[in-house]
Structures are given as C-alpha cells and as structure tokens.
Length: 242
Image (tube, rainbow, N blue to C red):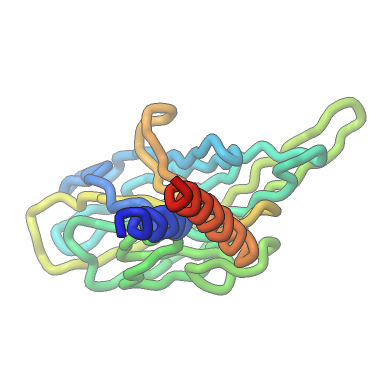
C-alpha cells in the first residue's frame, strides 16, 4: 500500500507542478491619500524565457474615494530571429488593491491597452486581482499581434530591437477611507512563440523574485504527466520485484 501511495503521490506532484500558480503576494506599494504627483515604477522580469516589461506610474490624484493613475507601459523584451524567443507580446496587466475598488474605468485609453474589466477572481496564472487592463480580446489574451509586440528587426550590421510602449489613464473609486491605496499585486500576461507566461512584478528593479507560470500546450501537459507516471510505475515494479 505504501508503494501504491508513492505512485499516486508522484503523479499528483507532477500535476501540481504543471498546473499550480503563484500565491498572492504582500503589498508592494502604498499610495497615501493626498499624495498626488508622486511617481513609482513597476518592473516585470523573468529569467526564463527572458521576458521584460516595466510601467512608469504617475499618481494624478489620490483622495479618500478616488485614485487616478497615469501609466506609461513598455515591453522591452529582447528577442532574436535566431531564437528560441522570436516573438513576445505583452497582453494584459492585473492590479490588486488592499481595499477593493467599487468602480474602475479608462478615462484615456491606450492605442493598444484599451480594454478594462473588474472583479477578476482569476487572472491568468491564478492571481486574484481587482482590475485588469488588456490589449487584445480580454484579460486572458488574444491574438499576439494585438498586444504590445516586440519583434527582431534586422539591421545592416546588427539586430535592432524596438521596444513597444503605450500609455493610458486609469481611474479607480472606492468607499470613503483614510487608509492608503495599498497595491498588493501587479501581474502581467505575455504571449510568445514559446507559449503564454504570467508572473508578478515589484517596485524595485533587479531586487524582486518573480514566480513564472508557463501555460504549455495540452500535449506538453500529457507528456509531463506521462513521464511522471512512467517513472512512478518503474519504481513501483522494482519495489515489488524485491
């Protein structure tokens, strides 16, 4: 019975590693009531496959009931025709606040980021967020060409990368409170030629740890599960043969 339990434990572990998402992080930034004019930046970086983006955020207005933020968001991922990363498109940005906003809208839409949805309980990657600003069909993504797409442009003597950027203004409202607008989580979704990737960001460049969730193709999930089951069965048979 112990051997059988080990078999199912290995298979379950493989499924958890494949499908689970990161936990909700602690607050990463607080915007005090009356702190209009302040600025901060959100950084999004992951080593594998080397995705990178950042958002410069300006607090246009912060009151007890309303927060107005100006975003300048940039996808500066390095891609190459030589691969393996040849296309990388930033599709959506999710934000979660300590006191849930009661309303949200884009008073100024971006040329790409022009969609917004609220009360998103499951942002891609299993992040729980309040507001999602997206560039394609919805918060889950869409056509890679509808996002902020960085592609490799071949120059005369070297590859030239042209970062993709966009700007928009986000207005949030809440019930009156003297508490700060505490930002718990900021997360992004990328669509690439290698698949979809979702991960959280931080407010200190090169000093935060991001947990990346890769959404593989169904065939990849079956392969990982099959390999885990094969290893588990091999170990089970060896123990039975002793």
